[in-house]
Image (cartoon, rainbow, N blue to C red; front, side, top):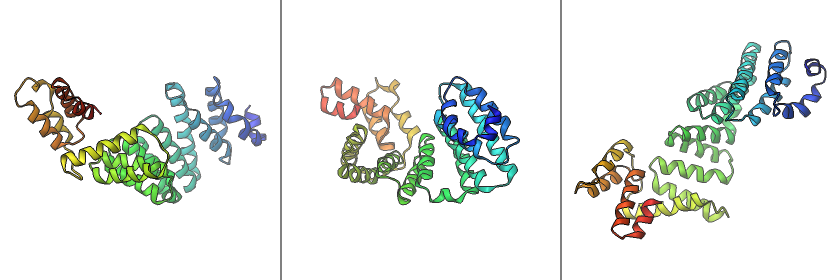
Length: 274
């Protein structure tokens, strides 16, 4: 197998993507790592890296660690060669690997290093979309919104718009989020229930609270909506305060739903639970 890696590189394109998905993937990756040490070009690791990222089974820790070992070795070789483009690509591949494993901080760091060594990423919509998704997963909604906006500005497809709107909503920009959701849903045939529901709820929220945007005080809102206060006469006022602190406080809306349901206000209860 190792000899064929050297002599028949045309076989790599055809068979590595298949072999990496078999039960023998560990031996395949180990063989590739050994061959890389004496191979002058990066064709082998390039094909294997892309195939490995696509084949990763997130439930298989051994496979994830083995693929990370391969990607780390690709980065080390790129640094040894001193080729900025290869270094940037290696960092980018690691960024995507950590993104798939939801290791957000590591993913963000590697994505940022990728653009440092390969400036082409700054012109690619997929780069901003992928980095935006990691920031969103990490709870950095304002930064995620900025990255999704950059992705759209660089030619990302319309399907990124609801992701942008979602980040805006969670960042506290309710009116702008509603506008972006509406622009997307009114121009496409996307029947995605989540986007439809969020647009509806944003409309209700904006009209009911009379607010376009806010700095969400999530911790204070959750404390005010503490269910242990449910027996106190002031609990409903505490829930109202929680909503004022954070219009998206899930605990407050859930407790509102319970209260409305118990008092027979079923329409209000439904909106609260949604």
